[in-house]
Image (tube, rainbow, N blue to C red; front, side, top):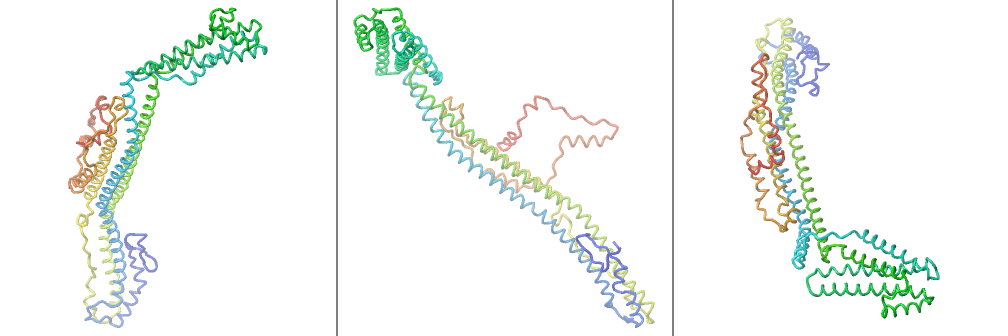
Length: 542
């Protein structure tokens, strides 16, 4: 540590931990040899002197100043190290608080989702009750026959209109002043009446399947009325065309067609008139069948069933959304806790690494203190040798004494709480806290919303909320955290696992021996192994 330090041998603690002590530079700066020679020529200090001279004290103080700066820097680094390690317990407390906050936040979020999920469940119960009553009242069989597409129904009716209008239009065109356009227009109006009345009659005939005399009367009256009307109407249309063939004007032909329909309904004048009657009747009957088969045979069953399914779908969406929100929040809290532990573990590990440098620093400090003693004595020797050569009287007896700085007392690493075992114990404690905390969070998340029925349960008839008696999650978590914080089991070193023991055994056998093979894991046990989340949650349940 002796060397050149610059003009004033000033130590910069930002560059080195312990300074170099340049004897030549200090002696030159203090002019030790010259002042020793000058003092010796005056026989100073006196032979009976017992105290150091001012120049000797200056030399000792110069070295002492560097020595104090080194000790100060050592204490500052030691204090910083102590703070880093002593913060382990406060880190544990902060992690405990974070876990508790995460649990409380998860429960608050769960209550919010329950408030949004409960109205959807109530709607499901209400509509399911209506469906059950409808089935019981009208002896219906669930599920109902699906309603046919509105687009398909419209296309069918348009097709019927097109067929009858085009075919009848040819017959009417022969007797219409406007030709084909007038005939088709007239046929379209007739076809529209046939299609709409037939479809409506078929739709209302389904009321016969409802319980109650009133509905059966409506169905019966509708079908009879339609049958009478479709026959008379199409017969009147056929007589109307026959009357037009007799060169009658439209008003006279209309009156004659009505008279003939009532008096001689089947006395049609031509084959074309019979074709008009047959086509109109067929189109109306096809529309009747379409109206009768448009949905379930029991009217109203499709509507109430669809309302129940819509309510169930809304509940399913709310149920999935609630679970998704809780899952995302759990993963978020889990990542926050794990990242927090990783950060604090890194800080504590750096503190344990600093222990090694502290030991090295302590060894260097002891060497420096010995060097400072030697440097002070070497500076004193230069002054005293020059003084003895120049003086005539005997030198003071204290010139034979060596200077020794007072040695400070240093505590052991264990006494200041810097033991590596303590730091590792706190790391294991924090890791266990997060492990238990995440497990409790997962348990609370799995238990959340369990009171609400699943979609499968609702379809099987279980629509009521279940009573879940799971205790107080926050109280359970607090008890588990308190147990971890108070226990001293983490001061014990972690046992070696099987792989580590196998590795040690292989090392002890030497290079010439073959290493011990690890047992193979069967595929069955690998597949049967539970996932990490379920295994962690099961630990808490156990």
